[in-house]
Image (cartoon, rainbow, N blue to C red; front, side, top):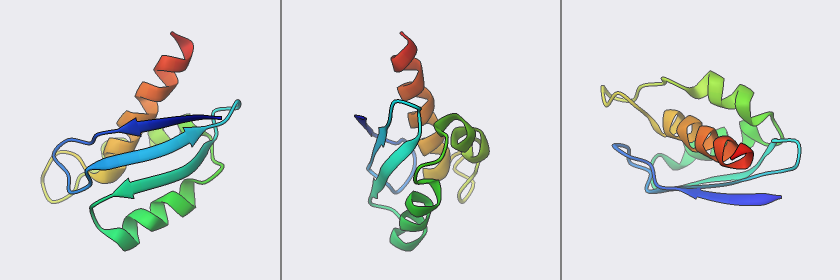
Length: 87
């Protein structure tokens, strides 16, 4: 299992940590900052799910007209992590 840290942009959350197992399934998704209840729920909902599928679902989610959201930023983080695994 490999761990990743991502610094989101234009959202309340300041950091996202998560792990990907050998099958590219998400584990231990944690947001630092932001809306605690909602972000804790996201972490629980995506646990042990296929990372690409989750990124596809969360991509483009908008919060307060920012053009992004913590969920959208997680999709970007996942995309970057998956890309680094194939590089």
